[in-house]
Length: 331
Image 1 (cartoon, rainbow, N blue to C red):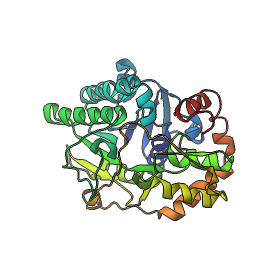
Image 2 (spheres, rainbow, N blue to C red):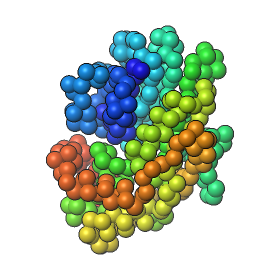
Image 3 (tube, helix red, strand yellow):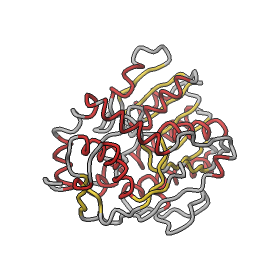
Image 4 (cartoon, rainbow, N blue to C red):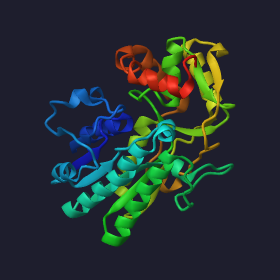
């Protein structure tokens, strides 16, 4: 099987690239290498005979057309994906998540790709006070990020219905693990705690998220790619609901720090209160998460503790300027 994986130098994308190589696939990895795209995440594959890297933007139709030639399937991880940054500047989110997805879909249709997988997010559903979202529930995005991802999802469904493109969508919950850019809650708080720096908790910290380990997320995407029905959506969640403040306290315990590092900062605009996913549809295809949250979180913290060489260079320069703009110089 030959795959075009977009965004394969990012956090989840690079993990999926490794999964695909391990399963015998040939992979073309197309990545723009924006701030969160890190070539180090796939450096071990540079000389692999079934791996090729293409430095390009999914909104570049010519580059995409060249990269997609001969692909059996496309798996689209390419996205601007951080809510906070989408509030600061939505334009790049629209370009990548909406325009880029349309370019990729059109290229897939013209190339006769047999399957298109759109990797999306639970955030497109909005907030749910109780229960869990099913794939048939309406979408109601709250942020420019989730709105841009919803726009991409709707295009995928339209290309399936109008052009007959064989496409599926996966909607994943909050994902964590090694090699995650340290702007998301877990890697940010782990690396800050390791350095004895404050942990900026939005509002009261009682926003609830469902956490899934990155390898389990990749397995879910692979299952949907192999076994999903054309035109269908599949939720990929870990079933590990917890308030952000509880996650914060677990991280402090695992890093040997106390709650004096917690800083409650002003909540962000439009912050969803709770996410939860019903994953019965994907489980019916034979998928289930294999990693327990406590053990996987401990392993994740250990990875960041041991791999300062990976994250310390990131948390300088432009990152530091963004961080101070977002949380304040003393957060």
